[in-house]
Amino acid sequence: MKNTVSTFLAAKQNGKKLTMLTAYDYSTAKLISSAGINSILVGDSLGNVILGYEDTVSVTMEDMIHHSKAVSRGSSDSLVVVDMPFMSYQASVYDAVVNAGRLMKEGRAGAVKLEGGKSVCPQIKAIVDSGIPVMAHLGLTPQSVNVFGGYKVQGKTEQAAKQLIEDALAVQQAGAFSVVLECVPSELAKLVTELLAIPTIGIGAGNDCDGQVLVNQDMLGMFNDYVPKFVKQFANVGEIMTNAFKAYDTEVKNGAYPEEKHGYQIDSSIIDHLRNTYSRKDLI
Image (cartoon, rainbow, N blue to C red; front, side, top):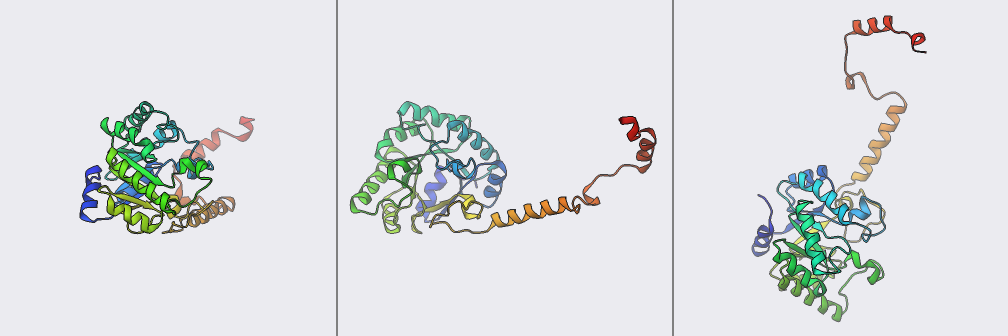
């Protein structure tokens, strides 16, 4: 069944967990969607795992549109949610609506995601009023890593926890259909989940959120520059790939690959005739 904003809400109401993984290309999106994952996030994490940036701040609208188009072509039933990159929505409500529209129209997104609480509620409301579904993102918001002074757990003090709750209620009121909670204490995430009528999607926020999201390269063991505490590697695809690359390198260099079965045939009489017609001396 095709996943939509409505099916997200129904899952929350029926107590069914939601799954979400990142993807940045057609092939991966096709595999994720065929596995029954509810939603694919075209995350600005592509800055880290695809483009090799140290953070997500350098990711552009053109980057997001390019990868979103590829993912949308590969996804069949998964809801494709696309991150709005740094400074595509913070400066003004106008910018937010225009750029969200580009992600939907050019990137073929099913929804957009943006970071922030009360401060971006005018943007959320305007985008939703324009007919574009919005997923909010609270807690550790990577685009604000320079303000936080690094990747740190958020909401650990009473004041910070209260602010997170108020932000969650505010983005819900503004029209967000769900909210990502990143690097938030598990009990706080549980409380937020209980308070909200919209689904919470956790990443480093414990098991009581309505769903979970991970970067696919993290959970497959393909990205080991750093591995967050909340990541479980469900397979070590990185090691499998490295071993395959090494085997290919060895077999090509020692002549074991390609074998005869990997090639195409031609009638030997044609080759004999060509050999009689041409010689190396003729070509010098």
